[in-house]
Length: 344
Ligand code: F6P
Image (cartoon, helix red, strand yellow):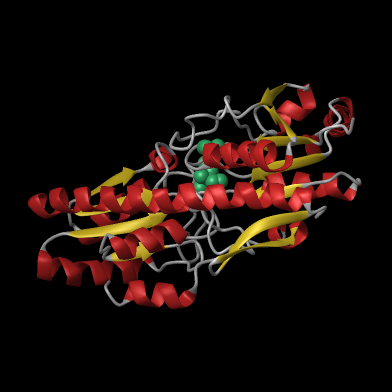
């Protein structure tokens, strides 16, 4: 009797809503359409290093479509830091006879996926980042949910800012790219949006703010965590780094609020939305995109594709080489930012 193909799957890096919907799609499509077996590795690459694996059936993914987070767990484990860890990944790929691996993750996770592909393993990646900054795909799942969450927060913050005649600074996620800030800023009617792509001039921001305040006696500013002042440096209060060497961001909102209050005399408060943006149930859009990505990844495995990543291009799900996805970040479209600026 012919052996059933064994598919491995893992979720790596920061979590986001829609990961479980991808897992469900990978399992259901594998089992129902191709009669493949599926094995989930726990906590990202750590699961492959430690051999922490569990079989996934249609029953084990039942009811998870709408659930945030990932039932497999995740981590920012970077096996490239330790050659022994890389060896253990190769060892466990062989030990569990994984015919193809579907890693779901951002550029760090997919960088390790590319390494594995270069060693002759069958790998198909699924792009994941709340920041929506992976090159090659129009959107990543989870991003739409985050934009909804931030827009809702902006609506709420606007009413209290207006009542108290305050400036409200809202810090959102966005390390290299200000997609969440720009999209939710447009949707939430922000008076200023500061993003990593465009270093900001604090004097200019304060001048514009004073004019705006004269008219309406309150203002809401959205700032991406990776935004940088002109002639300044990235502001990150924790001083810590993750295993991939990325600085743990956070703090620009408070810094900005203090500077604005000192320079303009306007009463200013700050709110950091933090991990709330990555939590909770995915929107319908994200559930659909996740499902399409999961199915497309399994279809790609079945078709014998290798070293590719599924991606959304216009209305279509396509395959692109993994190396194209990990080379660069996708920054905010200047035309979109121009639209946002019209309303500052
Ligand atoms: O990588 C996505 C991201 O959400 C960034 O926007 C943010 O800087 C980082 O993850 C936060 O990471 P952690 O969950 O490890 O604090």
